[in-house]
Image 1: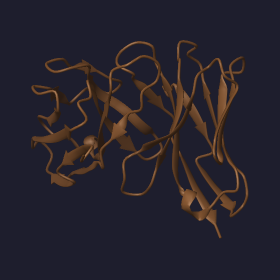
Image 2 (image 1 turned 180 degrees about the vertical axis):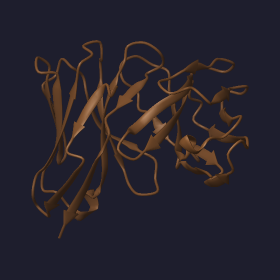
Image 3 (image 1 turned 90 degrees about the vertical axis):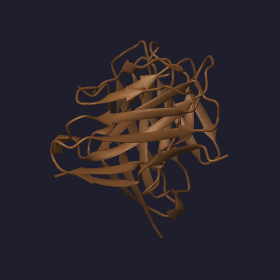
Length: 113
Length: 114
């Protein structure tokens, strides 16, 4: 079963708007929560990551909000731009193995001018 | 630096055929991974390696084998391809370290099994 649940599956936002993607998990042993961005025909690339002892992390227009008690985290993209149009994956890192990640199912974001 | 490269970029197989996907990284990373990406399912880990000569099973290992004879290379083999293995395959590598270290992904191999 999917260890990290992600929604929505797709999202259309006007340029300048806020894009919000949500993820939820059950396994409290996860110890890092990264977000990856993937453009068509390319491999995913790390966008931003957060530890579970931090409630928010901001890098430029991208912010992760983390709610440990609810076991939920979300990505907010402020002032969304057409260049942000991509597929976004949330993930969670397990403590065993080798930095292994469990990915959400992905959100295809389209920012229209 | 080329980063993570994958060979081939595209491949079409018939059911029952075999093939090997090659992943190479020039970043001297210890960890390497093979994922498959399917619509609506995200990326799922097939096998991974924590170092030269070692491999381990991920979430969906059935029907695949791997080898890591050299630190910079990680091979994914399909012995008898099935239509269910039609997917986009990504290789990734990651440095050893504490905390969270970024996984660097290759450009992917699109495999179709007829």
